[in-house]
Image (cartoon, rainbow, N blue to C red; front, side, top):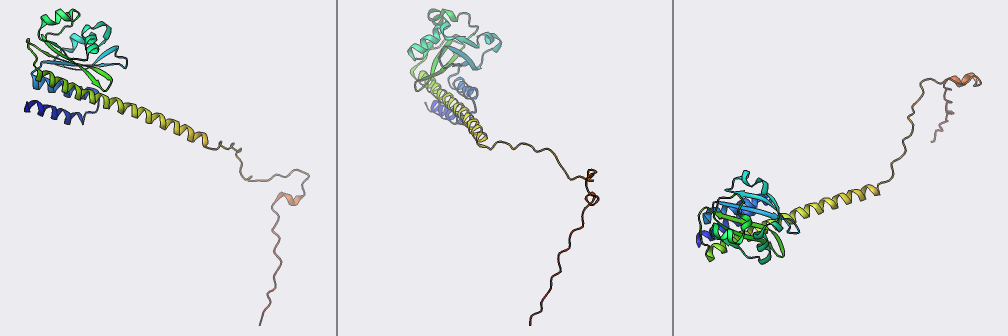
Length: 231
């Protein structure tokens, strides 16, 4: 019990430094694999309508075998539909249970026999689903399910934080754009550019001008002032 509590505390601490959803998902997946001995794990993010799932992170699975299944419709997965309908973890102790309940997973291309699947929910928003696989058949006790649910809750909270951060960043960018547009609209209209002009180096008067106009007239001297001495 202490080992599992310590694992949850480490996950919570590491998630506080996660910069994006994929990084947060890898922290949670790695913790479950280390604590419960799982050999594979995946995290799928759902769109806003919970109709399309996209794989964001995976560990212990050959990516080349699942490259065509990174994005899929929820309507085509019986397991995803059950998770969304009940909100409860779906536990498959062996491949026989998987075939019986979800025959559509026979061609999934994974080698693990036991799987635990948990829905990620934050408030009323469903973010995605996380799955953990074991190579050999196994039963899941109450402590196993509690730990998996706690890890899923941590990841759901991290996804919600990332969503809110992105929304706030987008809102701030939009407000900045509106403010800049308003500021530009309040500026006075630019002045019309005056034609370039400069002093003429030579003045060529027309023929009708008197000769004195051809040059600068001397400045008239100011009248002399008389200084009266006062006693």
